[in-house]
Length: 325
Image 1 (tube, rainbow, N blue to C red):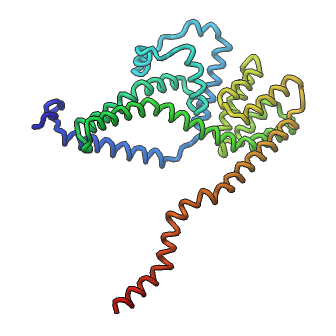
Image 2 (tube, rainbow, N blue to C red):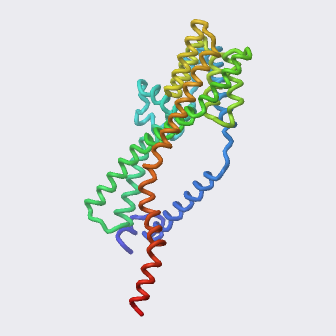
């Protein structure tokens, strides 16, 4: 029995612990591949979030005093950890909630889950790296290098939640910007047909739900808030806050001015749609112009060696045969 086996519980040895960790890792890989291959239905989650937002607005408008008489909910493990560490700072919770909403996380517990992983992930990564380099001794490194690996794992665990949220936010904003011109075209058709802004947003959200679930969700939430909030301008500003996108900010400003001054809605939206479509075309042309420079390195590394082998190989073989004979 080695020195490490004495500290392991349930009669485990270092070899059995390694096999157990590899089994757990294989199981997680299979689960990740399974969930990646499952076809998700975005309509169900979008409808659930819209219904939750509608119910929340109803409660706030019909029973405003209920906010002072909140029910004591049973604290989950994550809530207990966050409350014990005092991570819920009032001046940061609203900003963090907006940031998570921009990434698509709109549940009531999104802030608690994020803060929990923000606090626990560094310790989890550090513990796993400590077990890997000091207990299981994966890799024959010096103690200083092992310590650097452990510190790097802790740092990676600290920034991993922020990187995940930032990555999801960037991808979501790109999908919104890509589908916004088509949504504005549909909204122009609805405005010209005589529909109000609320009904137009509701209709566009239904029509564009399959092509762009993100934009459909934002438009439907805005339509719900326009019907429940006392100030229509606040509903449009909430759309800007949830997306933090320059194109949608221009749409919001146009809609606010239309609501304030009574300017024609269809004409303003048509101008914006043409402008955003031109911007999308310019971005596509820019990517196409960068394509030759991007393909230069792969062509040199992967294509030219094969081409030289095909062209020069037979000549080299014939020369070698002549020299041998």
